[in-house]
Image 1: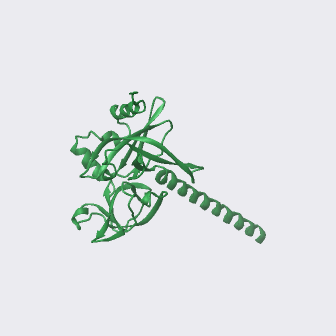
Image 2: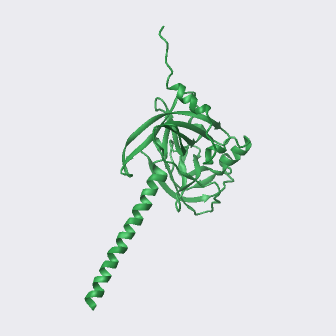
Length: 265
């Protein structure tokens, strides 16, 4: 009888370990698929300036996919051709390189420090989950994903240290965190750790005279996008509402751009 009980205990332990490992794999895969995969690099065609962005919508239209991204306006205000670099992975977790796509800016708001961009692809793109209703509190666990210093994609985790900043004035109303953030992370998504949903867009870091303090970082609330949409009479609701039809003009602009040429002289 004791041998049977021992065998049952061993089997039960193995089953628990397998289930725990499967649960860990599921969470880890979700982190890649909902956080790392949709986070892209935004840059000029010479890849000398830019920041980070993230894909929020991928919609099939005929033989192509129409994709929408959000990012920080201050990363794309140069009057240059823009591209995005989408990371590609093998077996979910193994990074294998980038695919480049032309980016067209559909709308840009310097006051909100946000832009909406579009691009097309021949396959569906991974997308983040936006959390447009969350009310953050001090000590909420968060992490951000970005291409700081234009290095490989990475994440930094921390906590919300002020859900709605009052001082200093340039960051008033923004989310303050203690997650390390660097130049190049601007425009990247801020995620809640418990459900991997996007609650903010990276704006900047604290500076005191000549001292840069990367562990005091500020993010525009994703709710600010709703305020922007309200100001323009809900003309941006197609960005975040799944059933709203996509506009024609920005994707037509991308299509025409692919056939641009310089006539012989």
